Length: 399
Image (cartoon, rainbow, N blue to C red):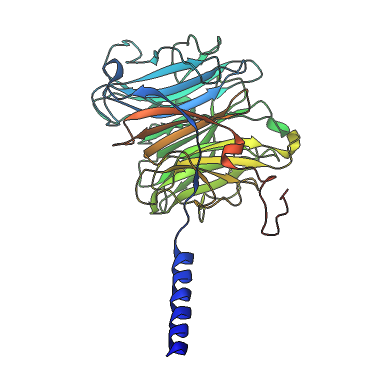
């Protein structure tokens, strides 16, 4: 009998250990500052969505959003609004309107959205790409550009650039929505690059890069992946240390947990080296995600690091989590190895690196609905983990 008891104890212990090993680990949750910049109902708007953020040459932060008049629908009266910070996101200006209405009437009903701001660090200019539709219908979708030469305080009249980067045959068209970049390496240093997407009006969808070589004055269609088996859209771009452009996209036709795609351009955004491919293991629901470079060995850092922000639940928009790639986008951290920013509902996001070296994250979040607020979070690399301080099982620092 005692032998049977011992055997039963061993079996039960083994089963308990097996069950424990099958329990999915959850990521650490960072302790971060949270500031609500846009709150549902503020200033008579029913909903704020689609955040985008940049740090200007002077170090100011510009936080953009769509202010949706009646509710959260994508096509209605929507204005582009902005808040500005001069102290690394600790305090913010009042909300101001950057763009509203039609070309002839700023008070007319129209949808102004999909902000894709880009900072030109050579001139200090901020270039803002966006799209417009009539507001009473979702077609046609027309791209626009406007600029600020005073650090985001005032803006030029928006200029229609449909003849440059759109096509009359196309249906849906969208810029961003997330910040674009200025290349700093290689033959195309100084070039501005942003992501767009469209449907070709004949059953196919394209993820595309657009670029400017004259500080945002004129724009060109660049790298394009047109296909019927996927819908690469809402493209976020980051410059690789070899001068290439890494493009991360939402695949709107993807399955649960397999809706992230990536592609690379090696010629400054003019062509893709290969079509967008599913990023295995980078699980999210079907939602926009944002990229931001944090470290680069060619700038004196010990390692490369690109950040990715998106909800981590495969089915629903919640658990916004920061994950990293240390090999220029070839592989990414798992959810368990990332850092959760919030356990609330969460959606679209964008990131910027502050003058302090902190990471600034602008994202949709809410305790009831991800569209309740747009929040700004500020945290350090220590909060999300540094590879040069991580330890192996033999307690030897990595790096």
